[in-house]
Length: 321
Image (cartoon, rainbow, N blue to C red):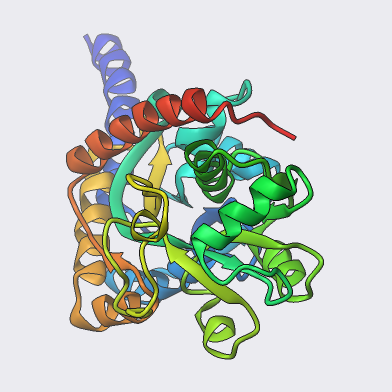
């Protein structure tokens, strides 16, 4: 009888360990993977929420920038990490809802990640170096049609959201503009500022100071309405491409099979931070809207985004360069 009890006890204890681990989480620092270089918009987004999140959870969040391959490198690290709540991921559409439509990736977005919460959404802006002889979207379209393939645009990499934003613009405007992918948005922006690249789509936050200083010219906002940060700038739909819209989003994920208790606690803490008046105002100042929603709501959002970009890739004919 004692032997039977010992065997049963040996079986029960290991089964209880995951619940115990979830109950004590977190008891050490948490690694936050970003699939972009430092200074890119997801990096800016992460650094707006990590101080409050660390305070809520009682542990530091250590940002680990793993840029490259359109976000694939960072996403793969997270997909293959232990589902213990100590590796998290802040991502934009690129790695998870765009790249899988353009190439084979070593993960499945809907199977290998657990959505925690949508953090923010915000429009892209179309910027051009002042040397480009076009001050409006209509003038840019006319210039591109007169010189097919001679103008170029930078992106943060193959398969990222601002790559697809321009490919959709090209298709809807009927123009040919040459794609030059970079390893991240900061490098791409630097070359647009220097005049080495003619134009690009980018989030407002990292470039608003350059716009206001006149170092780049902004031609249009890629959303359904004008931005409070740049109210004088028309939407691209207003400016000459009816129906055009392309927004960027950022959200937090964990590896698949992360315990539900950990996801619930993480969601509660993140939503509290994102919906705080201070963080809401910080996002608004950067031209973005802070969101904060439930894991189920964010999961539904991601599924819709996967479907949306399947259509955008097909419509635009986008390919990896």
